[in-house]
Amino acid sequence: MTKYVINGGKPLYGEIDISGAKNAAVAIIPAALMVDGPCRIENLPQISDVTMLLNILKEMGADIRTINKNTMEIDCSGIKTAEATFDMMRKIRASYYLIGAMLGRFGKAKVAMPGGCNFGGVRPIDQHIKGFEAMGAEVELTNGLVNCETNGGLKGASIFLDVVSVGATVNIMLAAALAEGMTVIENAAREPHIVDLANFLNSMGADIRGAGTNVIKVRGVKSLRGGTYAVIPDQIEAGTYMAAVAATGGDVLIKNVIPKHMDCISGKLREMGVTIVENGETLRVIRKSALKRTNVKTLPYPGFPTDMQPQVAVVLCLAKGTSIVTEGVWDNRYKYVDEIAKMGAKIKVEGRVAVIEGVDMLTGAPVTAPDLRAGAAMVIAGLCAEGTTEIEGVHYIERGYEAIIEKLRGVGADIKSVYVPDEQENESRDVG
Image 1 (tube, one colour):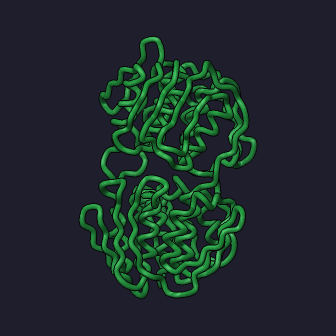
Image 2 (cartoon, helix red, strand yellow; image 1 turned 30 degrees about the horizontal axis):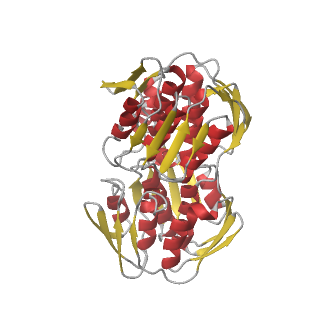
Image 3 (cartoon, helix red, strand yellow; image 1 turned 90 degrees about the vertical axis):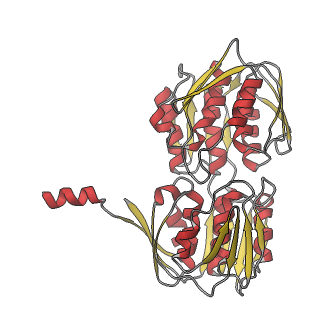
């Protein structure tokens, strides 16, 4: 077992380079399954979710070559099966993107229900299924497996999503790219990684228009060819480090970002008294004075992202006055509240609403990360807290943040990763 140990109370100064977007990478890697010949994907983040998806493709028969630590060449020409290793797929939410990719390529798919973070019960895939069925697939859910088959391949269709769903938008785009005819997705998600996936597929020969709006039109093509593509910078990673500077104070240059993608986050931090200066592909984040209270409601893009809700909540714990956070996407994304309360935070949760009373400071304590973004929030809490914070469950954090320890140490944080033998290992040593 690994845990993070943080000695907090130190402002951050320096520069942080942002890695490729996790949420784009975990959609683009399954999309490579549909490409004839090798495709080179650049700016891939070195995170466990990416490693897991690459391993799944490799076990299915893909030829994967490492060009450098952030560039992979993937050739899925040799894959003949529409099934993947179930145990591996249950560990990662993005495994369900293989359904759309397999349906597009093979006309059938058999995958495990998605895993990953658990903060809202079982992740529903009803909108994914609605799209697949509209395109002519028969879908059966049995024993934790999703089994899809078509009779003669997928056909283009008009699909209206009942709720704005990133996952369903991605999966239907993937399936439609090689389907016969035109598919129209209405009430589509508009997140930057939706646009990035469309750009990747188009660069490989797909015909997708309207990504970034609420209506996406996909005209199916016969095949996709190989090519080279670079993943966009990670909006949520950048936002997390911006929140860290807001919480600790200091002056940090966030490099390799698309400032337009950050508007929803930058706007809220500015309301709280944080100075943010845009310059090309950088954001300079400065916090010298006391934080101000504000209210935050998470919404689909271009609204404030749900994946930044725990991080900004920690910042608000240090703001003067009462702030209100409303979770507008997931039913239960406040599992971190009890852990942050151990550090002196004053948060009351009722349903989707959290009321936060600002405190003068947080105090270090042992805590456990229940999911990826909550884990990032605990790192931020540890950085600004007086004393020592120990965080367990860090495997969640490493699902989405490349080199988080090194990046934070580079701006002056006192944080390290410590290996702790588990009880069984200790017992075997005692016996020996």
